[in-house]
Length: 358
Image 1: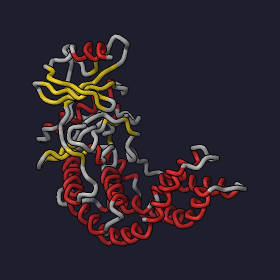
Image 2: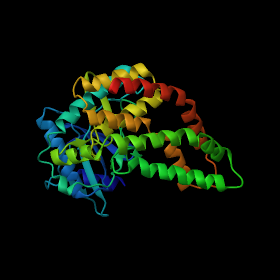
Image 3: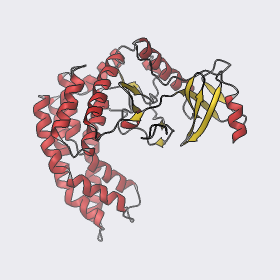
Image 4: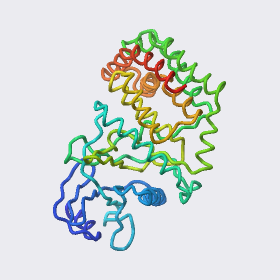
């Protein structure tokens, strides 16, 4: 393995001072700065599009971007003797965003708004060749010096097709409910899913009605396509680093033309879950975003509808139905109990956020 790494490193125009293995990658200290080397499983066209996005961000003054480094042949991807493909990109030491730190999450929200403004002017990005597959994320850990690549599942929110989005998920909930009801013997997980179904299904139906009756969210999708508006696609605490007063966003693998509010929703929901749906924090996060970029009426309605939909309950149902139904995961059962335990706070948060948004 070391010989293979030496073979790859020799093809790059950097003078390496030290290196260390971290999860899924190699962190390099060089005279030219800090870099990360890892195997690459995506397509060349996807990487090229990602690099165009980063170049545009840099043209707006966004200096700290994890751009790929070309090898001595001028190519972004390097193949070793075994046929494996490697990528080297800039990296930045820093601390991950702490979702328990109100100041940090508000700064992250303000930073996201600025990213969305910059990523709304990507005229050079060819949306016709946009890739829709999810890339594996390479994310730093929470420790300042451990900036390794950790293979995670693709971001929770990377794409959104408004047409029948909530209706499709509601049909999935109904299918799981029907399946469990027909079982003669039910375990604790199944009983808990059944017990919670009526409450969460009602929320799902309300979200579906808001989508179909009051607002046409397809407008936001068309607007994004026509104007070339990009979403980050993986705006989570792993990819938000703090370097003193600076905020650095990394890993643009999932950046794509799409509804930008999905980035805000994903980060807001995750933060609220980690903080017991604290109303004041949610209010401050929305305010921090809107200090830089105002939400449109349609974005406000979509954000509320997304928050209303019982995402976590749906995920547990989906995980159960597509997994080993005869075996109950204690971890999944505990997650379901935590979801239900937070529901009162979530309901109060929804009432508050409705007043804030409308």
